Structures are given as structure tokens and as C-alpha cells.
Length: 257
Ligand SMILES: NC(=O)c1ccc[n+]([C@@H]2O[C@H](COP(=O)([O-])OP(=O)(O)OC[C@H]3O[C@@H](n4cnc5c(N)ncnc54)[C@H](O)[C@@H]3O)[C@@H](O)[C@H]2O)c1
Image 1 (tube, protein in one colour):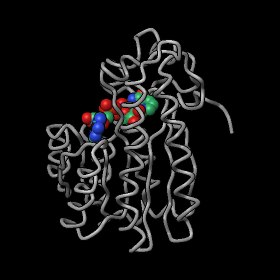
Image 2 (cartoon, protein in one colour):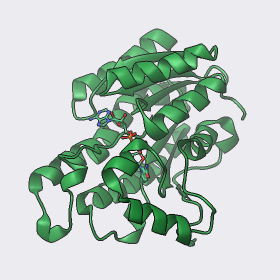
Image 3 (cartoon, rainbow, N blue to C red):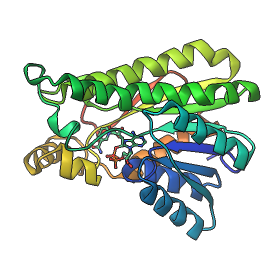
Image 4 (tube, protein in one colour):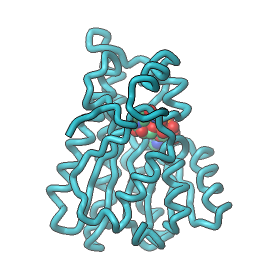
């Protein structure tokens, strides 16, 4: 892909799953990657895998709910690599205490809703807000946010999660429209079922996994690498004229325009 060599990319949530796979792909394409995560061990393991293949990466502990640590994440990227060219927001709170207690609306626990929005939506706004002045100074930059098929389908459960992800798509369009003329691109990826540890141990039962595998057009469920390729493309110069879009990456699970 064009223009990735030497690009400086922050992964907000690169300690595992889709974020880790994308960090590795970007590292392999020659980008300098700042792997941010609340789980420092996970971020360090990702950064080490990138270094092991000869890439450039740095692990940073940060928390999407803490404004100061978000600013420190961006500050570290600027200090260490001289600037930032892209941001991939991919973290979500998939813990048993939050996603595990996110039922339907009649089961609503306001604390679960608040935490879900703090991490999954306001957190993405925090990172984007921290990085935008750097991108605007440079006159160019790309942001990719992670939504979910749940934002489009009306899932029976995870009411807070799907609402936060619908908000992510609105945030993406806001950024694209507000700063597109100044060289900023923002797009969302909306994954279907991707076989990460969080998805298979926390979010989805074996029955749901098997039902989905059988009913989607593609012969298999998603792998983190399926998302990594698309996100890397969206952050590359090949995607220079793609702005404000939400791309469903789901093996054909939602056949719609
Ligand atoms: N896996 C799927 O099937 C699937 C489907 C649809 C959408 N998604 C979305 O894709 C993204 C990645 O999913 P995944 O399955 O790779 O999940 P994951 O749990 O493997 O990765 C999420 C990462 O976010 C980090 N994180 C959590 N809270 C944080 C915080 N407060 N600050 C900083 N980092 C924090 C975690 O430590 C973890 O490394 C999520 O946004 C998820 O909602 C996943």
C-alpha cells in the first residue's frame, strides 16, 4: 500500500485482538507504530512482535477514560517520532463487569451504560481531539474508528454497546465533514464476528458463533487480520479520497448499501 513507509500511527487499543493484528500489519508495511493500551503487557508484546520483524514500535500504557493519559499518549508519539499521521481507535471495554452485564434496556444498569460510553465513545472523542491539532498542523492525517455490526442490526442484548458504536459512526462523520477540507480523513470499520479472545470468551456463545458461521455468505468467521488489512488500507495514501465512510467487514453478514 502506498505512503505507509515512515507514517507514524497511534493504535488506541493495540494490546490484543484486532488492534494488535493491525499494529503488526502497519509495522510490517513500514509504519512507526505507537501501541497504546490500558494493558501494558499486551501493548509491549505487540510492540515486541513488530520489533522482531524489523519494524519500529513503542508500547504506551494509557486509559481512554483519562484525559491526561490520552494527551500523554499523543505527546509520546510526537516526542518519539516527531509527529503523528494516523490514529486507529479500536479499544472497547469487553470486561465481565461491563460488556458482560450489558443486557436489554429493561435490564439497564446506568453504571454499565456510563462506563461503556466513557470508553467506547467518549474515549474515541478524547483521542481524536488530542491528535487533531497535530494532524491539522501538518495539513494531513487519517483517523479510523471501530464500530460494530451491532450498531446497524438492533441486537437483542448489549443495548449500551450497540448505542455507543452507533455514536462512533456519527463521530466519524463529524470529524470528516468538519476537517476534511484541511486534509483530515475519518472513517469507521464495522466488524462482524471476528474470532478474538474477547469475542469468543466474553461476548458470544458457541451457539451464536456456529449459527453465524452457517448463515453468513463467507465460508468462515472473521480473523483479526481481515480487519488489519482494511484498516491499514484506510490509513494509507491509497485511501486518500475515502472520507466519512463506515465500512462493514463481516463476510457478507449484512447485505446492504
Ligand atoms: N471481535 C469482534 O467480533 C468484534 C465485532 C464487532 C466489533 N468489534 C470491536 O472491535 C474492537 C476490537 O475488538 P477485539 O475483539 O479485538 O477486542 P479486544 O478486547 O481484544 O481489544 C480491545 C483492547 O482495548 C483495550 N482497552 C480496554 N479498555 C481500555 C481503556 N479504557 N483504555 C485503553 N485501552 C483499553 C483492551 O485492553 C484490549 O487490548 C472493539 O472496539 C470491539 O468493540 C469486535
